[in-house]
Length: 572
Image 1: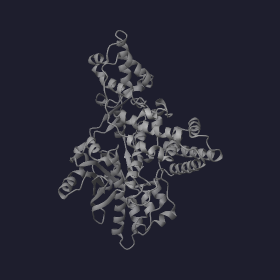
Image 2: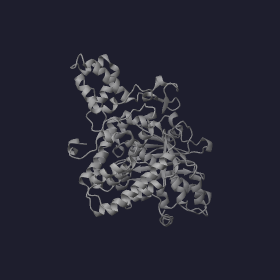
Image 3: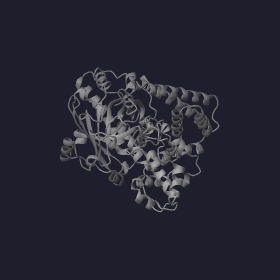
């Protein structure tokens, strides 16, 4: 993205945007990865067909979907297994799943399928080759899957109220890519597969097709269970089903390890919002549309079913505040979108502010959709050896004052440590002085590392202010990595997440929410401060919708009316 071309736009400041609580309040928006994937699928009319659908009466077996894009052919291979109910788990340490899948280049022949069948069900314990791009797995929803099959077999559509509580038939627990377990590297995917050369496009496509299989598998089982009475699931109900997801701490270090990419994502989002504020038409039609969207988002939040009291209170409060904004606009339209945003920022919570921002961006595709191409970049972190100690100190004081303001003499400021578990090498949290393994902690304490580096720079700068960073790094190699990061990120607009991630009160959920918002997930249901359930692709078009008129309006999905669901009962 050409920052100079956007320089006149009123971008929000980094200290406001990169605040961890605000990042944890973000919601999906028009350029979230699921949204851009679905737009490409529908607008380019990808062909997604069965090459194989060999399932027995109970739904176990093998399926292969072929995906023809304007540029190439991919195969999505599904292995559906029987597992005992006691083995079905959200945890990454599970070793059996109802469904295991891989997304591959090209067509899968019998020899290739045999290799995949021997390895894909093993997941992390297996080894596949670079023809595979994504490896994933999913488990049936205990509350929904059997209920839905039973209703269809009995000749009834599943009740919408039940689906609203759990908006999916399967829930994924991991989607691996980028060269793990022998798969294609990101460099290979980006260079050779233009349709997937955007962040997490391949992973999102795999989740979209897991959802598709789950719907077809439910119909298949119902039809075999009761051939004379079974009905096909209504199309509107199928669209209302998404794919569930369980996300834990494994996602959090990604944001700290890829600051250039995160800065780009944030900059694109903020640029989109700034374009709307600066150039979005502000007439009566737009006010009416915004009022409609505010009520839709309000209903979406109130339909979320969670037993997390804090999240439920947040949803209720945000829904109430969205309703107040809608009522206020109906009485007195905003003079400008900037006036509205400023008023909401001064009155309502961060959660409400960010829902409003997402809705405003939704109304102006012509202003922001071209930014989709800017969500990727090649990360390159370079050390400037000629920079002087004096200049390095100034950069830290200008860009990292938030880190220097933390009192690391307080025991609580370093109480938490992050480590990787032996079972699956997944990140975990420990308490320093209580839990073992502190000496093997992941280096995620950016703020503390900056403070240590700064203090060393200041100490040496007193005697040699013009000494170079090259000389400093030779004597203090432990600071080389953080200096390279500081120098590189000083050229970005948004830079690093402004938080002490080893504080006793750190909230990893904010990191998860931030990344998931860029994925495009909704209906957050935290199970602790360490992991969250959520829903992907709920409301999205089905593969059978490809080629029909496409209205890109499935964001903030809400329950369809009973009449529309029944009208679509025989549409398939």
